[in-house]
Amino acid sequence: MTTSPAETGTTRPEPEYFTRFSLSQRIEHAVLMVTFTILAVTGLAQRFYSMGWAEWIILNLGGIEYTRLIHRGFGFLFTASVLYHLVYVTHSLLWRHAKPSMLPTLKDARDVVTTLRYSLGFTDKPPQFGRYDYRQKFEYWGIIFGGAIIILSGFFLMFPLVVTRFLPGQFIAAAVEFHGWEATLAVLTIIVWHTYDTIFKPVIFPMDTSIFTGKISRERMIEEHPLEYAELMGQQSGPTPPPQEEPAPERAAMPGPSVGM
Ligand code: HEM
Ligand code: HEM
Image (tube, rainbow, N blue to C red):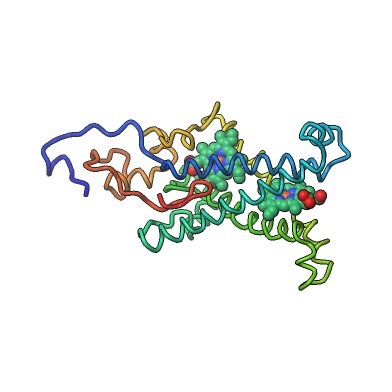
């Protein structure tokens, strides 16, 4: 419960930092970072095996057999982490009644339009975001749907004999294309989009460390997540909210691979 200073007769200092990500969310993101990076390196080296850099990677990993082995091993790990995430999200939503803050809403569509209008100078009011903005949601769902394609096609490539007992051989040829192109798209999205948002964006540079420390400053909360800030401070909106009486409840959202926040 949040009580206003008038009710309590006290004024508490506003927190300098807010907890944005729980430990389990940070661990999930770290696992995703490691598995995704190793899969991208070992997978793309196989796809572009005739290029100098790919040859260098394959040779340094001990040859093509080891490269394939590492890729398959991390493929299992990646699959396990995605399954864990889905179970965790379902559990948080159904049993802990966490808030589904990664779900796309009509407001996200309106925010896209407002951002365009703001960027083109048709309005001087940028959109106000809650816990996640539409770009973060888009990226999250991209990993979920892209991950589903990559995992399914990856298992098709791993067990072609089992698959062709039930499906025509063209499915294996299609799986190679789906897997390779979806992987390329995912890697480019992470390099171009995610590293820009979390490292190279001028207001963020040299790095947004919130996913490692779990903390975000009050200034950034007000600037980037004003609606969530207002909600946490017990107000509908407004830049000067009352002090917080108790820590905010855990909420459901998904930074990278987790929910349950
Ligand atoms: C984000 C994750 C992943 C990326 C970026 C990725 C990337 C790639 C790429 C680029 C290839 C080469 C395709 C070609 O030759 O055109 C490949 C092959 C392959 N991938 Fe993945 N992959 C990922 C996840 C997975 C997963 C989750 C699995 C298993 C479930 C998997 C299993 C395989 C298999 C079996 C091959 C064929 C090569 C071999 O026999 O080892 N990959 N991957
Ligand atoms: C040096 C590399 C990376 C850094 C510094 C980084 C940093 C971050 C940060 C700060 C967030 C939280 C953004 C927020 O406030 O909501 C985040 C979220 C996320 N990260 Fe990463 N990340 C890195 C690599 C990766 C990789 C390799 C993946 C692989 C798929 C990934 C997937 C995600 C996803 C899906 C989210 C949730 C969506 C979002 O909030 O944008 N990240 N990352």
